[in-house]
Length: 266
Image (cartoon, rainbow, N blue to C red; front, side, top):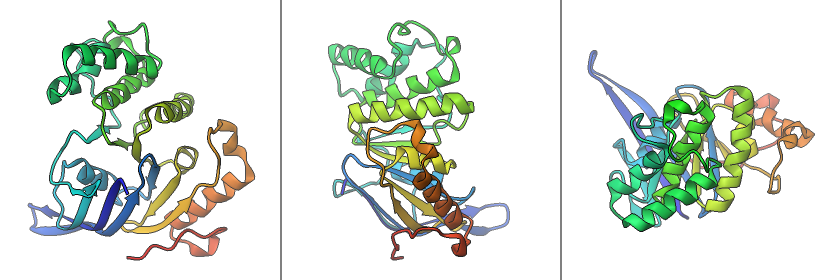
């Protein structure tokens, strides 16, 4: 497995009243090389906490997280994060923003950085905008730059935390399709956090469902649809049944389940 999460537990200490809040409890997940795994669950269930732990941005109390068999103890060049907000540097051009991560890592020479910047700007459909500034781009275009920046540094695992949440509904659906094209070309392992169940179904190979806090993995759904995918599949009866089944698990109403998730051993 490319990414392995075993028995992960995370507590937050609330300083004002001395309490400890259990955010994640005994979470175990694995992601294969090149797989697209989406995680859904109710608000506050610890999805973003889990992603930040995998990114190396948060410590954890119990368990293990590894990539290619190597334990994670902090941020590393093998991971890139695409956050909900593009967080672009406003004083840098689009090309400058895409180069930024590579400049920090110092793994690529000037020629390689230039070639990779050009390639990934083209890959996300922004050729011709290299000299523009973030303020001159729409929200969807800014997220394309965010994605290009993450990919340009050549991560082993791409971590995406609700990257389309701030976009309008039409732009969001278009970006979902564009992401699949980019993922197919880039061939990266993806861990994708979303509140939108139909987004998870459309994008992912598997969808993991987390419980309300403390977050646990309640079930994992294999997505049976072939690739490449089209937005029209969201109207397919099988897609709708699967969406309803995941909603039922999220809402903790087993009697509504129309199909079974893979049992998860805690």
